[in-house]
Length: 330
Image (cartoon, helix red, strand yellow):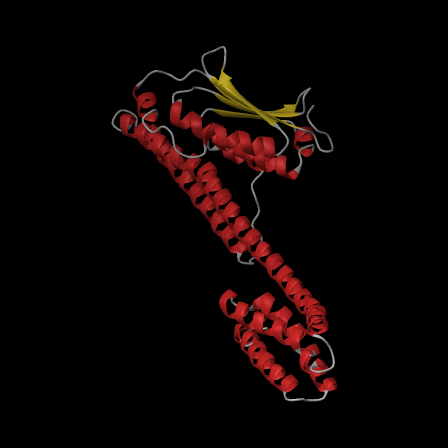
């Protein structure tokens, strides 16, 4: 049904109402007028459903009046004014019922459109968080590696060369993350779905992180639900990004995924950062992004819990616990 066709409902109802009233008062046989009333009722419902409010209100008022008043000319001289009013009120009921039915469908369609708009807005916010979680990790790595290469370029060219290789790998990772975001945007327009990274990619993620060590129990990975699996990966990305930003001098960063008493636990712990030029440079860029507060909301939405705090050796530890598949955290 096109927009032009819907725009004709109000004029059709207006013309039909005026013509029907005229026919009733000119003495057209009651059978024809009753048939005309039957055609006005669906038009009333269509006007209430599709027409603009201003023109629809005028057309609907004429339509209700036409349906309600059609028997009045037939009763002139044969019934009292009270009986005529009663007949008009009786015939007004189906007209009002048609308006209510059309208005209900209009309200349902409006609520559906609002739900679609809300869903698109939520998806945009989700994509913004994803862009931070995945791209900021690689961009932070590029910044830190470039800073480190600048300090050692004169004294240790081989170390600078390795830093450039890591910068290249981080840049390619950032491009891949952007591609996933673009694919997600295309998916919203009906394109093919793009895969969401999960714990199966933790090894690649940690491998790009200097000093990173991964301990992952395959059995624990299999017990994660799909939502928990992708959320666990995001926890690791956010935690590693924060290490690069705020503790670039940490010698060891250990990522561990295993079965614990509470459920499936993912922890990211870094040793105390070294105090030096690179550490100070790494601390310059603070804030931004969704941070641990936004990450906690993601984890809780997946049914888990998130803790973060200083460790005994002066480092920092982020720990997320998710329920095993088919279980819930107590």
